[in-house]
Image (tube, rainbow, N blue to C red; front, side, top):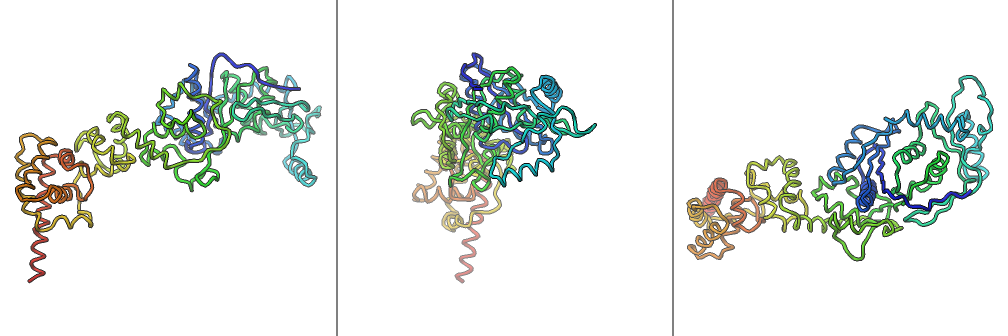
Length: 484
């Protein structure tokens, strides 16, 4: 018997179906993205389904982590989230139907028998599989005996999967055993619930990791026994670390929300994920609209992709520079909070973004660089104190008077005040600007000094210059004492 999917459904319905046993990882996020893009491209429906039948490992915390990750990435779903644990009645109904129609049967084999069967098959160098003993059983071995329910898989013919990424894959039914669709406690198994859900939800395209490829023929056989039409399948190759090995925590961020914590914009992460296995010519940067227009399943590479942290950083810098300042500020705000900075106690965050976007690689870095705009620092950087020497005390004092009396606190006015003070003491601009930068920021690196002063604000600038003057004069006193 040959089973093959050949017709393409008119209505596109895709789904993302994570198991809530942890965070939303990179591979899952890419699967969600590709499923979302394909639905959006074709005006279809994107479904979110939580596959939480593993009651021991599934947690509400993990469900929330998945939802949080998808919200942060902007992957909005049209239906759901559906939870499989809320559909047990439906699975029970289908199981009973299959038993009544002879498409499934009760298996009373003990764990000990199954283990012995497996050991014997392994010793004979045979593929371990259930031998179908209870398939022919007419009555239970004893009243009230425990049993599982197995699907009666076809024993001959092939299942042909026309995979949109891997190409044609052929499975021999003789190699597929009668898998369990319900455990002894009555709970349904993964391969069974997936089939019922995909059928009930009228899923047209299943885009998922290629670790599910071996489940596909079993799912097709169950689906067809129920009178359903198999969806179009596309199995994505895995994502590898830079070293070519399976991605793990040793490679850095593997959770989507870790990228947020490290200061990446969601647009950069989406663009990065899209390019992990998909391409359109040599183009590297894609807006959402461009992804909708250009994405197609046949363009997905059939070989594994490797993470490239350098490319993600490059993409992030691009989006930090080109996105609207208000959008970047929205995401920057969270990082300010992580550092204990209150964005209301200083300049508008949009102004900070405009000042620092060319100098920062991540939002986390930008938040750190902007700390001096929102709170006073306790000490100067050790490498910067050399700029607060005795010679700068008088020029700084003169500059303080100039800027304190400025009628308007603007960058051009502040720039001119610094120039005038430097000229009055016959100093090159840098000879005054750098001590001033140390005075107001505590370090030697900041945006142009006029913008830096403007962002810090008049009151803070004056107070910090006073502190720097006192520090410089104390240095002078200490130096004189040392000489005497």
